[in-house]
Structure formats: C-alpha cells, structure tokens
Length: 292
Picture 1 (cartoon, rainbow, N blue to C red):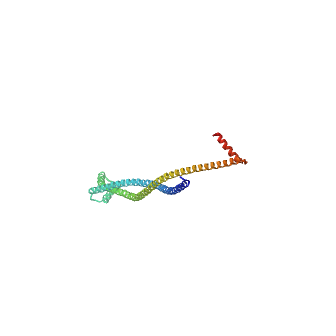
Picture 2: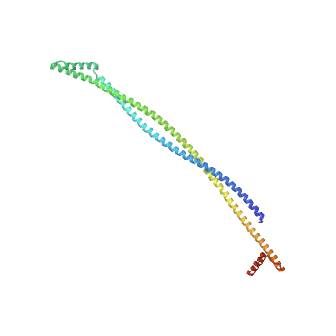
Picture 3: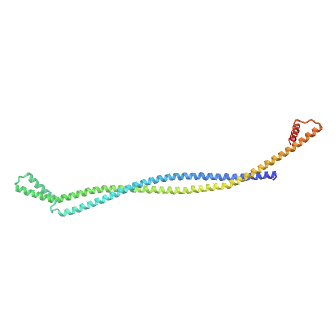
C-alpha cells in the first residue's frame, strides 16, 4: 500500500471515529437525561411511600378509636336495653300493686293514720281504747304499704329514666364522634389509596426509564466494538506508515552518506583538502570495513 493510500485510509478512519464519537456523546447525553429523570422519579416514589405509611398509621389510629367508641356504644346500648327492661318491670310491678291497693285514696288513709296517731299521743285513753286504736294503725299501715311500694317503684322509674336520659345523651355524643371519625378515616383512606396509585404510576415510569437506560447502554456496545476495531486499524496503518517513513529516511540517509563519501574520496584522490566532516565520514567507513 502506497503512502497516499495509507494517509487516505487513516483520514477515512479518523472521520469514522469522529462520527462514532459524536453518536456515543449523543447516546451518553440521552443516558444521563434518563438517569436524572429516573432518579427524580425514584425520589418522588420514596417520598410518596413515606406519605403513604404516615397516612396508613393515621388511618389505623383513627380506626382504633372508632373500634373503641363502637365498643362503648355497644355497652351503652346494652345498658339502655337493661334499663328499659327494668323500667318495664317496675311499671308492671306498679300495675300489680294497683290491683292490691284499697278503695280509699292514699291521702284519706294517711290523714286518718295521722289523726289516730295524734289522738294516741294527746288523749288519755283506757287500755281497751288504746288497743283498738293501735289495731287501726296497723290496718292503716298495711293499706298504705301498697301505696308506698307504688311510690318506691315510681321513684325507681324516675331515677332509671334520668339515667336513661344521660345514657341517650352519651349515646348521641358517641354517635356524633363516631360519624366524624368514620368520615375522617374514610377521607384518610382515600388519600392513602390516591398516594398508592400515584406512587405506582411513578414507579412504572421510573422502571420504564431504567429499561430505556439499559437499552441505551446496550447501544454503546457495538459502537465501542466498532471504535476499538477502527482504532486498531488506524494504529496498524500509522505504525506501517512510521516504519515506511523510517525505512525511507534511512535509505535517503544512506544514499546521502554514500554520495558524500564518494565525493570525499574523489577529493582525496585529487589531492584536495578534506573538511573535518568529510574526514570523519571516511574514517567511519574505513573502520566499518575493517570490522567487517
């Protein structure tokens, strides 16, 4: 291969290498862009995961409160049911007692009892009269006991109803609080689900970018292989060119040296004075011939 052909081949290879380098630079720039975008998305995904865990913890905490309030509500309902049954039983008791009450009113019986007790306390009575009045007191007490039992049951009903009212108010308060917490739990759950969906989409996009990044890296492999191949071809051509240059230089130097030696011998034969360089040149030649 001639020198011009080698120079032309080297120039062509250099041009191909420049083109490959340009393509590699473009691919690496795209890879960097993909990596940066992927890393940003992964960071967003990480933040969303943290927010999701926080919302889940908040929702679970709310649900625990809801569960506790529902237990209280159930206990309150059970207590209310028990009280209602007690009120019902007391009313039935009153109905039964009313069947046993005397025909005379409570006020008449009480007034008669008070009059007798006053008479016993303030009047001088013989034994027979006093005994008769005491018997009357016992009879009146027996008749009044049914009214007292009714009063006792009525008071018990009033107390139970007061307690029932307090429980109803507490139940209403629990219901309001439960409704608010249930609403908050639902809203928190919806936020969490939205974060999960958003995180899922971001993760899918990040994975797609990572796959594109891997494909980009794959594209550089044949470029690198081609570049190594061209670099090796260029190196060999340049080495061959250097060797030819060296050979040509040595040939030219040898020819020049032989010419100078011939000229120096001709001068010597003519009896002309030699220059120091010409003398040295002939001396080196003689020494070389002697060694040979």
